[in-house]
Image (tube, rainbow, N blue to C red):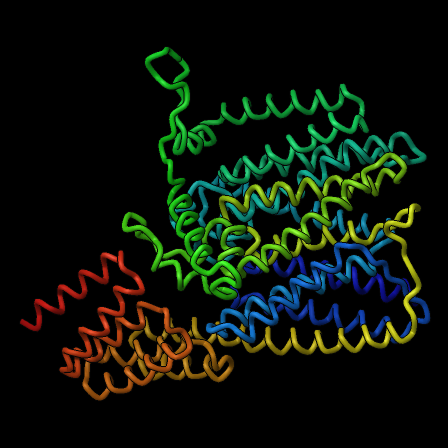
Length: 585
């Protein structure tokens, strides 16, 4: 019976991760409901297992404390946040990740579970790599039925919309697989079977690396190089693998870089940032930086750092970076990004010093435990998963300096699973020892899991449903079906009362009818949207247009001044204000 419950949990975990991948990485909220329902089912089945079986165990490690502290802190910040809708999404996602972490740490501690989990993520990575390479080779811009943005043309993204997020998944799995190949010889009775297993692992690694190249992600290449370099540094310092193997890895890394640069598409992607003067003389630089701003990333990072300095203790609030950033961005940055393209700085800006301290404590405990488990006295499979997980986290942290992989649920689920696997491994020295879970502890944990299952399912259904209604309303609005669009937006607000964007869209649908009566209704919707999100400059701009339509130029002018305070460098807003002034002369 115990195997039945554990098998069910592993299957549900696999469904959760694979459904996230199938939903464009889980980033599209309107398609992410299956992922969250699988998470709720995991909590429910885990609770049933605790109540049904007579045996149960748990293991305390220092890593549990900061992870649990992060969840509590995010919950507190939700209740104190100004932007409730964004904070509710953050709490839902962090709650799901915490559930996956503790489930993995408490339940998937046997070797066979690790083997199944690794098999799932490796097969998924190979499938993603093959799909991504197909997109790259054929020039297709479709992800399933969805046409991705033109800016990603010629790059493979797999089931993700952005190729950089595919690279995040592939780089992490490649390093886990590399550690398995080097550290874990997998002794099998038959030599032929052992050779076949190694050949399959090498083939999978090759396919993943080809997919990573096809993604065209410079951040992914950089992160893989960082992870491989960390592997070589670990091998060189600890001498736990033969020096010739470590040196061969370093040579292979250099040869791989040279081979990759021989591919025209790779060389072109690199030359968009760097130019190389192969005929080096003293009059010219050997390497010249062409884009010091890294396509706006450096500018966003500087703005995010200033945001953190202005709100150092508790940050601007969960999910609020997008709405504070316009006040800090420079005039030359014309895009309106949703994320900072630097996960670490964005986390600091949104959660402040206390959140950063909890995150750093979690990472420190994780790396300490992972490196402890790589010692020679542990089994090869435990050493391999410990080292591979540490390298994967190291690589994604490096990539997170240039992108927002940790805001993509599929990639975040992969990382928390790897971290949970490390927290599940016990030792003989008493540092991490598994203990029997008392009956009272099982009942309390089961009740908490039942509450978690209900909370995840309820909130996911409402939030995902609201997003679907919003998208349906946008389609109706594009067809100029104003009443139908407004009805869709109202249904979105019925599911998520704090959804400011739905109220803003109601206001737009009224405003675009260009009648005084509709403008009055638009103002009411815009004011409700601003009560929920007072930092949305676009909504403030629309209130100014509504006041102008009603002939109240003073209030229209005041609204525009507020717009310029929220987004001082937006050229489009300035142009709209000048048009309005010229019209009212």
